[in-house]
Length: 329
Picture 1 (cartoon, one colour):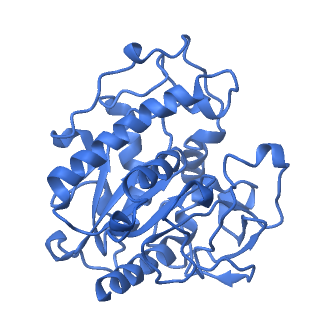
Picture 2 (spheres, one colour):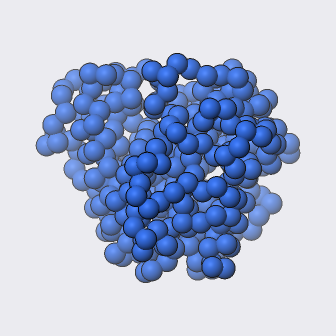
């Protein structure tokens, strides 16, 4: 248990101290671009054994050939130490961390109902979220170009007209916000979007012309978002923008009301615990307040790292419900 807690604290990229790259941002100084025609530049792909294939022991693997929907997952910040503002997509050590944690414990939540695609991208250094003097916009825009190119490649070579789920966390959600705006914010493309799970980062619905937030459990062609905090915690408005925007859904009830509800149970790094950690959540001023006895959560006010783990089984069921509703339509 102590080891698990240590690992999670180390992966708290957005809130962990890290040294800034020593030079100002210059696109030509960044590592080479990923080639999405090569499988090595995908952390997860269907019909291939990878980190996104984790399932509980109580379930049986469902062959990807039987799944009618795809999920395009964008992982959070893991890059905390390096000389460039954007990560190297060929960095084996970094990729191992990406596969072992966010892809394994977040992207896997979708694998019972959808084929999982997760591109490697040159994510921005964590310092862009900590240092006001850093080239935040330039580094994040640079990272987004990889995500955009990966999705464009996916649409041209993998999609074949299939419905899509967009899923993300933290830095991945900064890119997902823009991705759904660039690709799905029209009546025609909105109809192809089952749902976008844009988790752990502020979302502002007024940015979209056509897309709207989901208001019901099985609503489709819409998006959801939340950021988790310890029950009763609230910070100053000046610090609020990064995680809490103008919208929050409760990922247990899938409503935007303030009613407190109990979930199916959460986990740290073992979804096969005999007894999952109890989780109860309610919305307060777009903060998702959580009551749980999970070890890390008991000692932290900001539960950013646990935005998927706390409600993993609730999300898994909701994905199946939304897909069923979409296909029925």
